[in-house]
Image 1 (cartoon, helix red, strand yellow):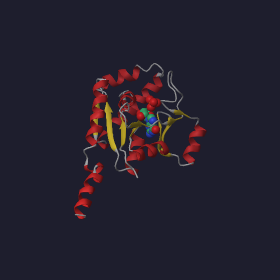
Image 2: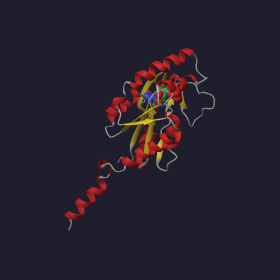
Image 3: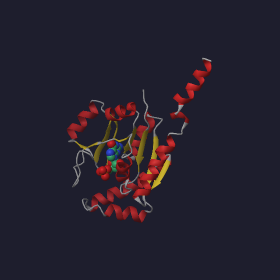
Image 4: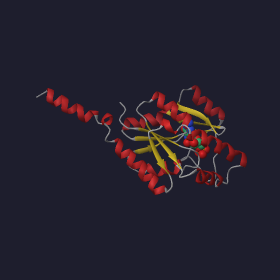
Length: 203
Ligand code: 5GP
């Protein structure tokens, strides 16, 4: 039985979503899913960031139906593994998926109860300067990310919540406020409500 909430966080590269999500999971029962990718690790990245796989290893996992979703993003494959997501949801943890819009749309189709959050920087100018600040990338990679970012922004209407990342502390707080507010949704409180009905019936 699924007890936790599934949150999908997307937005263009440079929106700062991975930093926000990492900070938001500091909260006791939030679990940030670690994706598998065929992208090479950047300086300083390790097993807390991604499960780095070869294309062969990634394809093997596709064949074995191990992914909840996967997509090709900026020329590399990225995917969410089913097992840790469902293990955590069953434990009652909120699971956060920080994934691109293609993956989000796949999740939305199969998991209607997911909560969709879109993260944006405060302006296009800030987005460009954040993308350029990534020294690890070539001009060609920058252009590809910028083009994909604009494509992603055009899908924002598919999401439920908008978080503008101007200041990281505020953005983390906003994500945590959204999670807190979700606790008030009727659909997550049906056990409590059903108890009233059952008790009344046994009076
Ligand atoms: P980066 O290479 O900058 O870490 O991530 C590139 C893009 O891939 C980001 O938009 C990120 O949200 C997305 N991404 C990361 N993990 C996954 C995943 O498991 N599935 C999908 N569909 N996208 C992912």
